[in-house]
Length: 380
Image (tube, rainbow, N blue to C red; front, side, top):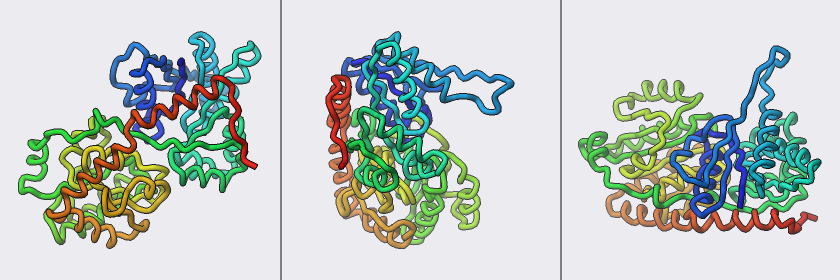
């Protein structure tokens, strides 16, 4: 099939999932066209079935703000028409789903039928979408899509709870490429970070407040009172300066490394002993899944879709949001030398249930359904 993928090109979850989906589809022979304002961060290899189309946003003195959505619509129309796309797949409701709907209507005037699939990723529903200025657009865009998916059952339920949705939402979980995310032999790297055989703890996020990165530092501070450990923080964002201040207050700066945004995160995960995700909101927890694929057990909060991912006592533990002491207790249990091999194996086994080859066919089936104009169930 010929599929247009509209997404944010950033390191965030929705952009990563959209890019990895496109790459996986291209490997299976589908022609994939990415449509966004810059090249996606994980669009990092050549494939004859992958094409990137940049949205050209021009400024004019009349406009106070750049008209990105209009430019996006025009680019979608152009690509859909001349590449003869079978489906437009919008990742993240705002503004991609509404822009896709407008593009579909423009194409219909020329008797070109291009169905829309919309995938809901999290904050487009749980945060941005709840804003009164966006909520009507979100509801309309979802209801006008030919197919709708959510990355977790929790996100599906929350969408129905907060919006007037009549369209059936199909849960298609996020996935991981086990060829890329696997434990690699990088012991020289671990020795450089942990020269005295300390445990290596890792956190990865966009450093927004809902990620509760400060909780990660507090958990680490308490862990160090019991075991020798180092902490690696992958990512960057608005909370970084506050987290750096907290490290100084707690006197943990010498044992914490801020690695910033990274592409080859699997190399760091390969030498990690534990992954911390104490988020206040998390629609699925893709970073945690990637850690598990590298045989790293996870301590997470019970926010959003995280309980759908982590199996207590096997791949890690789920604790209440903000319960630092509980997370410390469970972390010490996992890092016990008698327990750690069991949890590492459990993490890998759980990750295998979300392997890319198991999830991508669900998207392919959805594309076939909407492309052939088969009816979708309606909520009554």
